[in-house]
Length: 430
Image (spheres, rainbow, N blue to C red):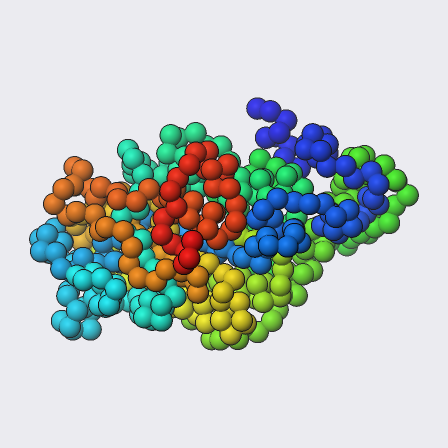
């Protein structure tokens, strides 16, 4: 393995990438150094102040882990084949009781799960869209492999860096900002990991700090000394690099914790996803320079007794997304923030013998924001023309990524995705 991959934050890599820091104090945070030097960063950079660059645009990614059942989320209630394949778990047609599908005015014969009242409200308000039948060729039904494919944007199975991480690498040219990408969770997903730029990751804002002093008070002074003033003028020195990195982390930690301490402008429902989105909304409100935030919720691997579990999960997703949009709208930021939700695959068309569904293929993606082309887009996969019981995808997920990168983030999707993809019709006036 190369030094580039083993030591993504190394001094050598900074020098290889052409970042010259010798003229500035080693203890100055890196993002301040970049500003003082007037570095001209390319289109889409979080650190740019170039006129015309969409520096204020934000992407929020929500991962539905476990393989969400797209057929019982975006429901083809106009299809008899749907009800034949799922005699016990199918969602009834609109108007047939409290557990019936929520009818969408944007599409005939297509509705939402009755628990998705939050998303239905956003659809009715014209600030949400659904792209149907998203997948990729030769689908992989392993949770880990399929998630890697979605994270890397590479169905060929080579792990590599994440698609958002490559966006960071291209935008920042190897000059990382500790706030450019933030993941709310116990680990940074592969999607956010670049070759040179890595995101910040934390479950709770109070945990994003130096915790050595919790174990031993004697560790506080050495840590503060690392980031404090020093006489070393050679900023290419390893110690200077450590000082600079520590200072960056200290400044970032204080800004994050101060931001999250604010009270939200709307009421949020309970649940882990709701808590994550509340923190993200608070950080957006504080005008942090973060370009991409990442949240996730698991539990969608519904092999048995799907109905109750799936209903609870979808209610949390729909209600959390509605509260999040309401919060950023109250801030005046709803025109800046695009939210994208996805799952690693859908479920098989027929129900199984345990009242659930097994790993499948194509599934919907969901997009929320004032900039969205509202409604239901793409063609719902056929329930007759199946691939060994699975849906055939109608939209490649990389086309959705291209739409986000090209038409929203102002990035070169070709460079990030490795080849040209036609942008899916996601953004208005694209």
